[in-house]
Amino acid sequence: MASRVSLVASHLVAHNATAAAPADPFSPSDPYIASLLAHNAAALAQFNERNGTSPISVSFDAKVPHVGIITFNNPAQLNSLSVGMGKAFGRAIDFLNDTARDVRAVVLTGEGRAFCAGADLRRAGTRQKGLDDDKVYEGSEFYNLYLGPIRRCKVPLICSINGHAIGAGFSVALACDMRTAFKDAKVGVNFVRLGLHPGMAATQTLPLLLGTQHAARLLLTGELQPASHPLMSPLFLSTHDTPAASLAAALDVARKAASASPLAVQATTKTLRMRWEANIDQTLEREGWGQMMGRLVEGGAQVAEGTRATAEKREPVFRPVDK
Image (cartoon, rainbow, N blue to C red; front, side, top):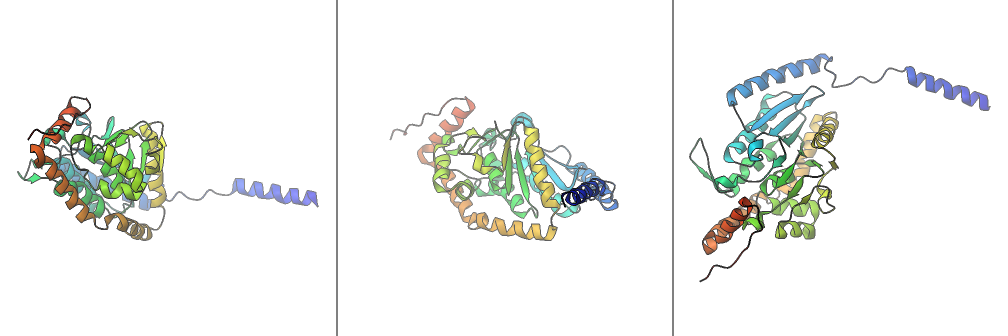
């Protein structure tokens, strides 16, 4: 009897060893995938030609043909958020939604040593003037340059934090559907250390992701910690030894989502977002009001001290203004 069992087992091993491996649904040799890659490459070339030099770049990887990659690409300014970058980000999302073909997931990352250092303090933080329309964007209007595209992205948006992600920059990552991170990246929402009420929907996303108590610690202290810190690690699917490993992990999750039913994944993505989108406009209005008051009370002295201390790389010292 034992010999018969051994014979069957050896037959199964031999059969499995010689059985053809399942076809790769994303192989460039597949005619559909080859056509898809060619279409998206041509569409991307036209998109880049129209947009010229941009603080946002869009790319595709032949190994994950259904995945669009958006990169914050202004490393000289640590990818700080500006009106121009927000508009370019919106154009990139719209391109992947409407012009590129069969995009089933999007990965967002940054170029250089930071994912995003927050709002561009050289342009008065979140009160910024558009370079092309001479309009002043502040509060919720500025934040919606980033949150609006995230909300209308039709597919899962996975953020790979390649380096420091601070303030509004980290809040952009929190608004994405999933996150991976380089373990040594400093992350946090330091608004109160700038003399500002938190914004970019951080007061809504953080309590949902961490619970009220831990979210309150981050929002009320403004502390920054490595992504691998126990307080921060629940915010990420995984943390990694290098930025490249974080990006590879994000692309792997995107590839798995892209291999599932596109209709089911898109519908589920919408459902999952309902929780953080509930009352989001009211939250942004409240955050914008809080930031405006910070600029008005005491003549904005605390905002001035917070931003000055950050620029001078020192701890802020907040004092009441003499009456």
